[in-house]
Amino acid sequence: MKLFAEFAFETETAETVYMALLPELDDSFSQRSAIGLSLEDKNKLVLSVKAEDAVSLRSALNTWFRLIQIAQEVLETTYEVSC
Image (cartoon, rainbow, N blue to C red; front, top):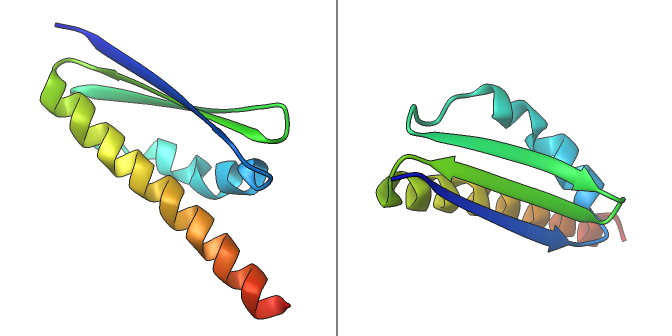
């Protein structure tokens, strides 16, 4: 079974989050899934995941949702501290 999911995140910090996560694409989290990360316009981050099975898809999505969330939280925290 082949599965595919794609999510778009619209935020003013999309470009910064994209640049922060770009090095993570070099690490292979699983042999059973493939990750795509792209920037559309300046405010839209697109995450695509292809997986061999539902378990791999869920695992990859959980990992990348968490990475995106952490990057966003760090940006928010550093913004609050600098103000």
